[in-house]
Each structure stands twice: as C-alpha cells, then as structure tokens.
Image 1 (cartoon, rainbow, N blue to C red):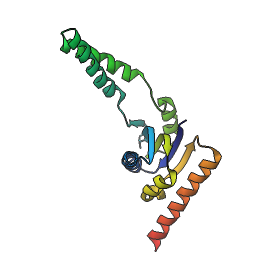
Image 2 (image 1 turned 30 degrees about the horizontal axis):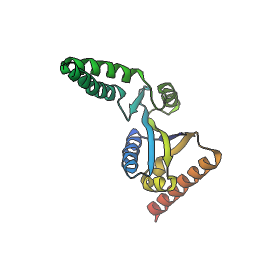
Image 3 (image 1 turned 45 degrees about the vertical axis):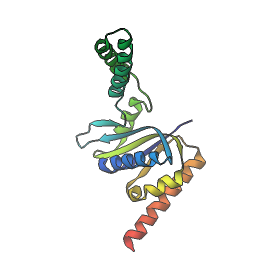
Image 4 (image 1 turned 30 degrees about the vertical axis):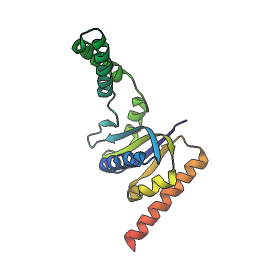
Length: 173
C-alpha cells in the first residue's frame, strides 16, 4: 500500500529541487515513488500542477510503438504508428494515475499565494536515509498532510524537526 505525503515549501523552486533530488534518491533504491507532483499557488492566485510524468506523451510513445508493431504485421507500419500514437495519447490524457488532480488542486487552493507543495505517493522508503539526503531543504519544509500511521507520521515529523535543528545549529555555529 502506498502512502500520501504532502510537504509545503515557501517557494516553488524548493519543491522542484526536492523532487529532482528524490528522483536521484529513487535511482539508489532508497525510495520508490508512484507519483510526485509540485503544486504551485502563484502570486496571481492560480494553481498550477507540475506532474512528474506527462501521461499524454507517455501514452503516445507507447501507442506509437504498439501501433508500428501491429502495422508492420499488416504491411502498413506508418498508418499503424499514427493510429497507435493517437489512441495512446488519448488514453494517456484521460487516465489519472497516481494522485488525483482534484485533490492536488484542493491542496493548491489551501496554500498561501506564492508558495508550493510537493505531493508524493510513496510505495516504499527508508525514511531516515531519505530525510538525511534532503537535510538542506528541511528548514523550509513543513509536513502538511499524510496517510501514514500516527506512529510513522510522528517519526517523520521527528526526523524533519531533528534535521531542521541540525541545519539551524550549523547555520548559527
């Protein structure tokens, strides 16, 4: 079962930087993400979603491949690729994998103008190692929502607080 974690940041750049770092951490198998979306509430009051995966493009690519393969079998690979890409793009645009867009927009509306949140759907993680890697972002991060158990949520808050205190001590000392 996956867990939803929403972390708020005062600036969109911080949320984007954490998402980029999480991709690197995922390659080291310290975390397994199903979805990672930056939700921005800009200064004009508009909510923007920055999806980690463009489902329309992914669908078109996959559809194009399968369409080419089917077209090759029937001696018309270009037509097959075009039809496959179109069907794949349409199915990708209509599917909402991961965190629902309506929930993400709701989160965005609750954010102060000019700030952002990073919404994560985490399949598995080694929280202490992940938080250790994200230490530099801790002073700006605030846990907003989670579907973790109370025990795991308290542990994550403690790790964030401890990391925030260590960063503060290094800054002052």
